[in-house]
Length: 280
Image (cartoon, rainbow, N blue to C red; front, side, top):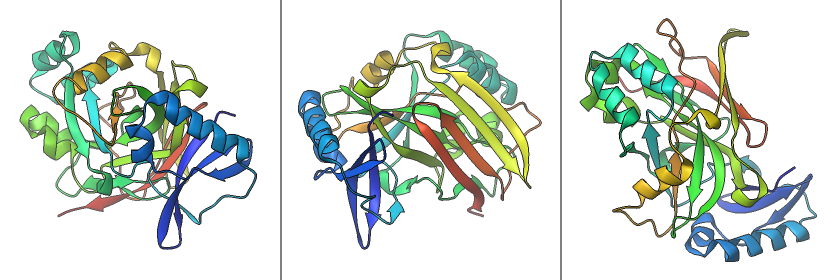
């Protein structure tokens, strides 16, 4: 199994740990520290910790795999995403233009304090009637725009709000419990893209929706998305960039409170979250 980096709760504090082949070790550094270093230095530190790993899991709870990092997201990077946006909106030509243009759609998703961890509830807005999970690969980028690692992400989305007017996208995408990441970060040097991504929604013990895609179906490359994000912004502590979804349920499906969302990838793990209503 590849090395994975975990953000763990340890009593009243937190720590970052490395895991490989059933062995755990304390990293002795936070993610912000690692992402401020050149990639080769961060890699050396992680691999040294992995070689020394010999103990049990050094924490009693799972935290989101961020500490000081913002989460940004890209939209309409898959053909299915473009078609889904057109399906929900009366502004279909707008999404054709975004899908085909040189400049991608990029938007702020969450600050580190709003990111949900493995096992914690994700939310659907109380003022929305059509809501879906968006299963995505997240790029963990260091301060120099180097690709440090990957994680799984759930970019919860209100299709009814964005569909009413594309300018409502911030309200459709940014609210409490709208972003889940995890279960861990897998270093970029230990796995190879493309990645298979599976989405399953369970309801009352049954599978209410399932679908899958691969990042090989993306219309844009990881490097292209990262380049656009860094063109006019700096991220001294690094950043997580969600790369869009290729799994969009048909119009007849909406997520409900009490559902359980599972996003999985053979190489990046499984991110599972129950669903609750947020807001009024």
